[in-house]
Structures are given as C-alpha cells and as structure tokens.
Image 1 (tube, rainbow, N blue to C red):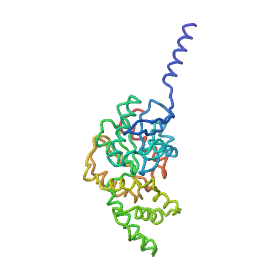
Image 2 (tube, rainbow, N blue to C red):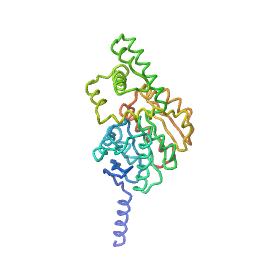
Image 3 (cartoon, rainbow, N blue to C red):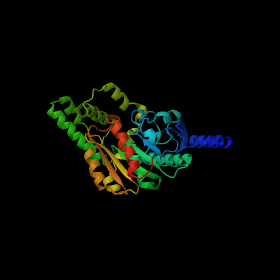
Image 4 (cartoon, rainbow, N blue to C red):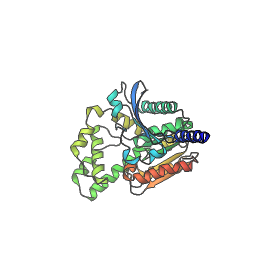
Length: 318
C-alpha cells in the first residue's frame, strides 16, 4: 500500500509538470538605445512564440489583439510589441533619434533576438499587419533561420502603385456620385503625398467613398495634424519607395499571405500578384471574402482558424 501511495504521488507530480502553465505579463527590453514594451500572453508557456507587429506607423499594439487572439493564445504565446514612439514604449521614452525604416527594422531584429534568448528558443512566428509587414518582410529576408514562418496580413508590397490605384478609384467614385467637394479635394492630392494635408484628405475620402464609414472629421484632423505625430510622414514616404516585386523575389522561410478581397488600402490585386511571384520553401495564401484592410477585426474567427492551420501545414505538433 505504501508503495502504491508513493507511485500515485509521483504520477501526480508528473501530471503537474506537464500541465499547461499560462503566461500573462508585460516586459520592458532595452532595444535600440531605449526601453521598449511588450505584452506576453498565452495559455501554455511551452507553445511557440508569435510576435505581432501592428500597423500604423504610430499605432500602439499592446491590448489591440484581444478581439482576435482568444484561440491564438491556445496555440501560441502571443507577443504584442509597442514600437518606438508608440503606446507604452512612448510613455517610457520618446525616440532620441529620427525614426527611419532602417531603425525600425533593426528594432524588430533585436526584439526577435531578445525573445528567443528570454524563452530559450531557436525560432518563432512573426505576424505583421499593414505597416508591420514592412518590418516582417525584412525579418524574413535577413533572419529567415529564426522564423518558423512569416504571416503577412494586408501586406505593404508596392504602396506607391496601390495609392495611385486608390486615388483613381476614389476620383471615379466621386465623379459617379457627382460629389463636387470630393472631386475638388482629391484633385489636390499627389502620390507620393507632398504634405500632411494631402495624407489627411486622401484618408478622409477613403473612409467615406470606399469604406462607406461614418467619420468624425475633426477627430481625424486632430490625429493627422497632431505635432507629436509628424515623425510618421517621412517614415511612410520612405517605406513607400520600396517595391518588393523587384527587391524581394524570394525568402528562405515559409510565408503565408492573408488578403482581404476588398482591400483597397494595400491593394489585394498587388498582394495576389506578389504571392504568385515570391519563392519560398513553403507558401500559402488565405483570401478573406468579407474583409478589406482589417482582416483580424472583420473576420476574427476565420483569421485565427487559418493562422492555426499553418501549424499542421508545417508539420508541427500542437
């Protein structure tokens, strides 16, 4: 009987050892000469890391994935990163130097290395959305050996062409609707944008004419003309000068595209064309029929299901 009790106790200890150990914490890493904040959440510490690089630039990430990450947290450790001059990182310290694409890319590399070291892992997953795909594609290009796979959601590929297509579409819609105010204001816009005013007008009419959204124009104006946000526009223009069709015909890690069928902001046609062109060890594309640019928020259940399905496609046990 005594031996049986000892055996049962040992088995109980084994069960506890292999039980899921959730994680829910925030951390501050010294990255690029400043403190940068991340949120780390998951139902099991043993699951693979998934680094979420959100859109913007200038948008916080921490706390923004709750509506589309419930299932993801069962299969991944979800890491939300507030980039420099955003969210909690901005609260800790503004960037002491001008924010450039190269600087942001180096931050992303350092975040990956820091996470891998902290969790004693060889690889992780990266999920970039919109502006976040600029950094994500660079990770896939320069450190593919550290990525299980790269998820490119509403990817920035050839944004100058995408913006020209959007401006043409808006102008035609304004003419069809005989919206003289829209016609007049859209006629003042040049691609690439020459100033903040043009950016504001473009996005204002995109929300109204293309997205059919009810919009608080003053709130949008306050956002675009906020003096603390002016660092964004040189960064955006710099990113738009790149064309991945020419610059990145291949990557050496698996890559998966998530494309909204009605995305005019990062045009879905360009995304589908680039997917056909790019070479990778494994690749896949998920088309979301009911989504535009904001796939994770428009179709959160399907988005998570497709993301999780990649684990099986890669032969990874879950």
